[in-house]
Length: 385
Image 1 (cartoon, rainbow, N blue to C red):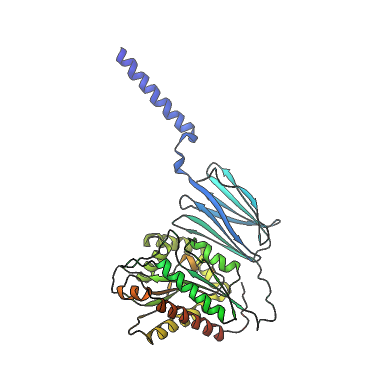
Image 2: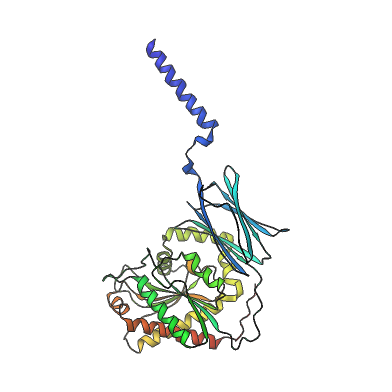
C-alpha cells in the first residue's frame, strides 16, 4: 500500500507539471524565440539604411502606410532584448523616428516614421543574422556648375580589425594589403584635384559589410570600389578579376562571394531564393541604371590592371569581369565594383603583394581606370527611379 501511494503521488506530480507547461507557455524555454538585439541606421536627405540585428534569421512581413508616412515590419517568432532601445528620434534625413515593441506574444513590430520616400527594399543577411532595410527618397537636384564639380569616390579596403580576410602561406594578411592599396589610391586621386576621396576605414578596424556602402550612399558618392585580395585552396591559382553585383551559376565566383560574405555556399543558395521571392536584386540593379555603368567601370579597372602589370611582370592572368552576390555591393546607389587584385594564397602573388611597389602599381592602375571611366561618360549623370 505504501508503494502504491508513492506511485500515485509521482503520477499526480507528473500530470500536474505537464498541465502547468501546457497552460503556462511562458514557462517554456525562451531560447525558441528569435531575439531582436539592436537597431542601427545611417540616414541622409535622400537615403536611409536601417539594420535590425537578430539572434537568428527571421520571417517577416512589411507594410507601408501614409498620413503620416511610415513603414512597419512584423518579425515572426521574435522577442525584444531587454537592452534594446525601443524608441528614438533621428535628426535630419528622411528617417524621423524608430519605434519597436512586442506587438503580441510571438511578434515584434518595428515602425519607421519617415518623410516623403520613393521606394524601399528589404533583405535578410546572415552571419550575423540581420534584416537590412534600404529607403530611398527624392534625390536632390544637382548644381548647374557640374563642369567644375569634383567627383566623389569612396574606396573600401576589405576586412579589418578582428577580420584578417585571407592569409597567405607566409602569413601576409589581406586586410593589411588592401588597406595600403586603398590609402595609396586615395593619395593618387587627391593629387589630381578633380576628386573628393573617402575611405570606409583608414586604420586596422572592423567595419560591418552593410555599413560600407551605406557610407558611400550617405556621401552621395559617384563611385564605390571595394578592394580585396583573392584566395583559393589550390595554391597555383592566380590572377586578377573584377566583380559586379548579381546572382550567378558560376561555382567559383560563388565561392569567392561566400568567402567575402563570410557565409557558406548553402546559405548563399537560401538567400538567393529569399531575394528572388522578394525581387530585391532586380530592383537594386534597375535603380538608376547603375548596372550598365558598373559594367563600364569594371572593364576599365580590369583592363587597366592587367595591361599595366603586364608591362612589368610576365604572364599576369586575366580572369575577367564576373557577376556574384557580395553583401558589400548590395544597396549601393552608385556604380560599384569589387576588385580582387591578386591571389594571396598563391606563393608568387603573395610575394608580390608584400612589396610596396607592386601595391603602388595596383593603385595607379585603378586610378587610371577611374580617369578613363569619367572621360567615357556624360558630364551630368541623371539618377532616376
